[in-house]
Length: 317
Ligand SMILES: Nc1ncnc2c1ncn2[C@@H]1O[C@H](COP(=O)(O)OP(=O)(O)O)[C@@H](O)[C@H]1O
Ligand SMILES: [Mg+2]
Image 1 (cartoon, rainbow, N blue to C red):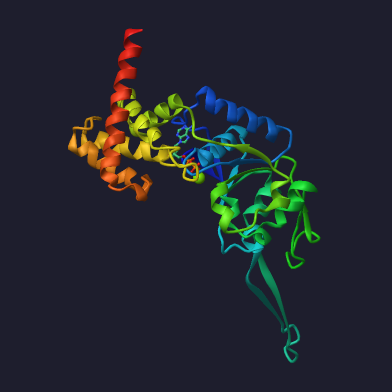
Image 2: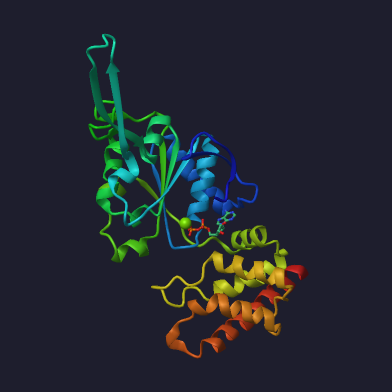
């Protein structure tokens, strides 16, 4: 978890405080404000966008600002509804031996199932903020319980749960934040339309250059000028093929962290820097355009050059 953990009230929910390393530029603030407003009005929020655009980090930050305990779940193809709401985990057997009159022995045995609430039930019961990260990785039928939670604010539970009459009224402070990557579920599960219909979807795309430079600096410890060169290299490799999003912010953070640790200079003629860039970025280069090494080198040279020129221009103005 990237947010600071302060205490745990049970094994599932966590008290979060906004992280010191969370970068809040105007671009990020806009997304945070929109999400906060929708949650305050009682609606669930859904951050939707490509990998590495900061969705999970945003969800954690927004959840932390609510000041309620947070429960985090990750979508999983193997999930069934009991992974969300709860299940029996064994039997409780009790035996009473009545030997009050010693010539007569009366025994009484009873069996009852033991029930454990799972994360959705706990969050609904306690009024937590539920983060359901990559929820479309779970099959739609596993997520069905969420429909009545979000619409009627009632969680339907199996009759065998000992307390409640087969349902639970959702705590008024319960809120949910979802994240998903639209490219992932296109081929895997059909869109979970009924669920999507109940969420307010906020599209998240790559941040502006300034935000990416600040995040790379904050996450790697690299000076701003070094982070800027790296971010420019990574950004120059995006958007060549609209179907492919290219390297994300994660690539910038990786290159910057290793470059700092290896004391590599952010120059194309530093062989260590070139190796780091090549290793982190090679996967992102269109394989049809071999030789990729040359292509990576070309991008690095061009981006490092233009970044240097931008820096010089900024210094002169
Ligand atoms: N606002 C931010 N402040 C600090 N770091 C961030 C911020 N947004 C994203 N990051 C960092 O960028 C990387 C990718 O973010 P993440 O939330 O995991 O993306 P996604 O969930 O969209 O794949 C992570 O290392 C994360 O710590
Ligand atoms: Mg994520």
